[in-house]
Image (cartoon, rainbow, N blue to C red):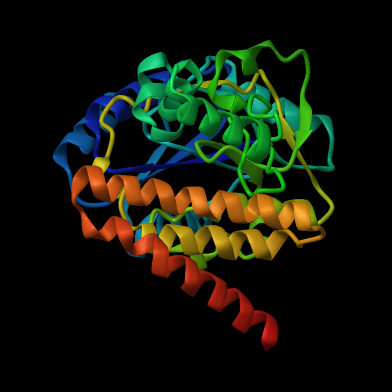
Length: 330
């Protein structure tokens, strides 16, 4: 069994160099790398030339966004397994070997993921994890209450679990922390971590690849969408603690890609109602609390940055619900 490893790159040479170096050290080298760039860069080609023993197909994407790049890579995929990682990941030496062993262990496994551990610096660079740590340690009652609202209500006390979507629509964060490495065995999950994502190529092509409905914004939820579609075919999604990598987000972080709340909130609403059905008042209230807090976050971003685009989450919320309602009426 072999794999194609899709690596989208925004030409972050330092980060990509560390990623390729970790790929060059894998204990099993039966893979091909599909490296997809945004624009021509002599630095990327010079970096590739340093690894002549790696089979790398490098091309510039023609389709838009991360989803377009992923689908172009999928079209070129030739092997049984399709893997997607970020260009700022550093892989454990047995990462690839353990992905293949997991798929080979059970034909019913359709997708595999694993730990995406961040450093303390990386956790602090992400607003959600940084805010939660700050809220938890704060002596201010309002901030401690916000932590409890997130931890106990939205995350149902499961924030440290791995690769699970909960009733409010949040996904658990345990993969990002070293505790994920301590799991004794593989567990079945309902999400595949976006930067440590793998699936059987045949099934991924069967479901139509990655849905371009999420194209705008950051392409949020297109990986989760594909994962849950795979699960709907009857296949299992598995988190193997031995499929481990470090997500090196603090190196070459692309801040310019972080806006577009108008589209990001829509992506969330479309994704949620595509895969989850409201079955109780409790679930509805958790979902609406999540959406309210997302809008509050973007309002905070507007107040601290002055960027009016951050207010786009408010109309985006209404448009997202309108899209869902209109679809259900048809």
